[in-house]
Length: 429
Figure 1: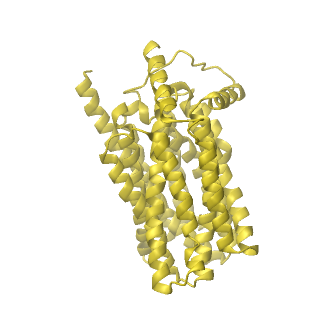
Figure 2 (figure 1 turned 30 degrees about the vertical axis):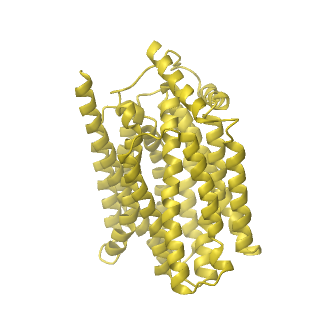
Figure 3 (figure 1 turned 120 degrees about the vertical axis):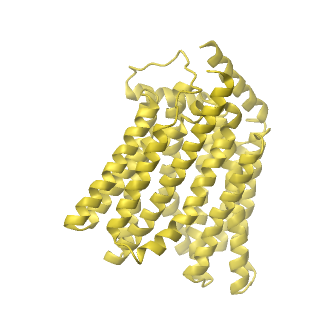
C-alpha cells in the first residue's frame, strides 16, 4: 500500500470513527433523556434517579483497568465490535421485554449496569486505537472532530428526546437506542484498526491479569509525562465537581433561576466545546502542549472563581443568566484546550502494548474520583457559604496546576523527547 493510499484510508477511518461516535452519542443522549423522565415520573424519587446514575458509574470504575488489560492482549477491533454488538442486543432484548411485560425499575438498573460495562470496553478500545487508524499528523484533528460530533450530539440529544417524549412510548426510546448502536457498529466494522499499528517487542500475551495491571501502573509511575498529567487531571476532575454541584444550586436555589434559564446556561457548555473543538480540528498540532494545558487549567481556576461573582455583586435576573451563559461557553471551550493536548500526548507517548492499560487507568481514576467529589461538594454546599466554597476551590485548583505542572518537573522539551523516544522504539521493533 502506498503512502497516498494509506492516507486516503485514514481519511475513511476518520469519517467512520467520527460518524459512529456521533450517532452512538445522540442515541445514548435521547435514551438518557427518556429514561430519566420515565424514572422520575414513575417514582417521583430523586434517590431512584440517582441509583440509575450510580448503576452507570460503578461498572465503569471497576472494569476500566480490566478492559485496559484485555485491550492490550486481544485484537482491539474484535473487542470493540463484540462490545457494541452486545449493547445492541441488550437494547433489543429490553425493547421486546418491555413490549410484552412492561418496564420496571430492576430492568432499568440492570440495563444501565450492563450498558456501562459493555461501553467501557468499546469506548476504551476506540480511544486506545486512534493512533492505529489515523496518521500521526491528524491525531489531533481526529480527537477534535470526535469531540465536535459528541458535543453536537449532546446538545441535540436532549432537544430531540424532549420532543419525542410527548409523542412516543418508552419502548420507542429503547428501539432508537438499539438502532443507534447498530449504526455505530456498522461504522466500526469499516474501520481498519491496523492501518498504522506499530508493534513493539515487549508484548506478553500470556501475562496474568494482575501482573499486567501492575506493569501498566509501574509504567505510568515511571513515565516523565503521563504520571504528572494523570495526577493533575485527577485533581482537576475532583475540583470540577464543585461546579457540577454548585452551578445548579447557585442559579436555581440561591439566585432563583427557572429550569428553562438553567437549561440555557447548561447548553452553553456544549456550545463552547463544539466551537473550540471545530477550531482546533482546523489548526496544526499544539507546538507547546504542556504550556497549553497549564494555561487552560489556570484559566479554569479563574473561571471557577468567577462563578461566585453574582453572589457578591447584584446583577438582577437577566444579568446573571447572561453572565453564566458566557461563563458556560468559556468553560466548555477551555476544557477542550485542556483535553485535546492531553489526549494527543497520551496517544503519541504511550507504546502500543501499554495504551489500553494507560487509558483504562486514566478512565478509572477520572470516573472513581467523580462520585467522591459529588458527595463531598453536595455536603459542603449544604453547610457553608457557596461563594466561600467556590473561591477556596478555585485557589486549590490553581495551586494543583502550578505545583503539578511546574516547568522544573514537566515541560514541552520533555514531552517532545518522549514522542521521539517512542518513535525510535517503534522503528526498531
